[in-house]
Image (tube, rainbow, N blue to C red; front, side):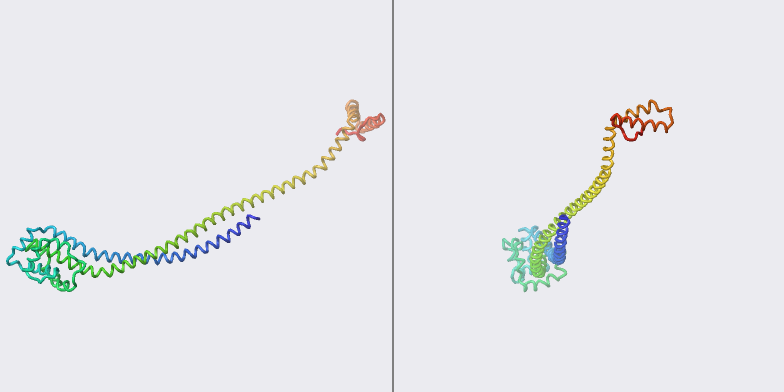
Length: 319
């Protein structure tokens, strides 16, 4: 009975905690879905930013690498032109614009005369190009003849410079486009981190509740087993008790019979001598006679035993 009460109380507690856990899990699942959606959006934004970077950076690094092919002799070769080809001048006009110098071959030769010219190209501040300069360079960028593969037919050194100029223009365009995206991405990542941190707290709390419910369910299962074992034991005891009562009742009936047998045996023991004498005479002498005569003689011998005060049964019988 006590086990039954304990099981019922535990079942109520398990159901209550399970209900609370289900409600909390439903809330967490909604927030997990929201966080997953946010994470997907952030991933999309990051992919978009990376796509823009993948467009600008390879060209930029390729241009920087191309500059490695230039040396002092290459620059001297360009400076040696008294009347340089039109596209060489056109290329260096773009360089002059980027370095805030008036376009012209004389000015271009002045830039090339700087011992750090190649270093200046490699370390150019690509992140802070004047928008006015970029606007002026658009005609160069859109000119179908201002391409490295076309300039290479005129001068390999000018080809490297052309690639560098185009890389600067591309990088600037992408950088200006990508900056707001990078800012939005950073904000979204911060928001996602905050959501994930808050979600983790709730998930940890949910796991704690689920763990407690699991423990209670295990305890409930053990308690129900114990209750079942006790009920089975109780039923077994009832059956054994019923059988014992039946056995005791049966033995009670036997008691009367045993008492009667004991009394009869006690009488037989008292009359043993007389009964033996009559039985011996009956067997030894009365065999040839009729039944009536044998009974009559036996009765007379019993009377004689009584006269001689020899205990014997009042009525003799060989049975």
